[in-house]
Length: 251
Ligand code: 13P
Image 1 (spheres, rainbow, N blue to C red):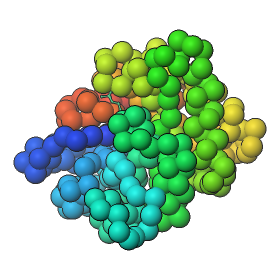
Image 2: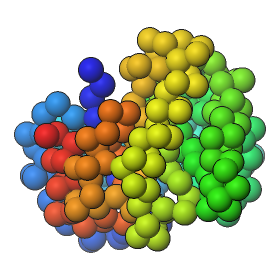
Image 3: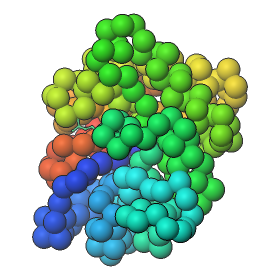
């Protein structure tokens, strides 16, 4: 039985004051959650604050990006070991915003994924197609290409240490969610593709859905057989919404 994981991706939002209020609310409301895991991926400057508020809570935390390099002259970058210094468990890798806005290629994503695994972090690997790709009936081939790049470097042994997030680009921040059936079809495709290489690892792999998940649609999405929780953007900034989404993963 896979345990569902709900993770918040705060993106570039928050302040010390706002985070303190949000993290405190989550810590209290999610103190006794069972049979699921939840986490927040915060902007790196707030990792110390997040660690100090969540230290004794069952909520995990992580970052939204990291360097593929261990150390060196890489101005502005943050390494895996720096994330570990602040107790991170997770790091989002290959989010579509990083791919589209910061030029992260499949190869860069694969290198970051490998560096996260090597450091003992759990990468949340984001894959997903754009609207144009979906309309051209290319969703599966795009996702296969994104997965193959990571498999070429880290293999199924890497996947065994990771979480995958299927995030159709057209559903991110648009209010347009993939229907539960549409999302399920892609999740099943991902699992079957990986099962060809290793059925046990594919069966255990947590595959989250991301893209306009909110309290109102979470339960139906999470009831699909291959949807193991969600990666939540906008709704993760609102305590009541995020808590309700976590509770939907529990039931
Ligand atoms: P929204 O939930 O705001 O659509 O964002 C999804 C996302 O990109 C999570 O990584």
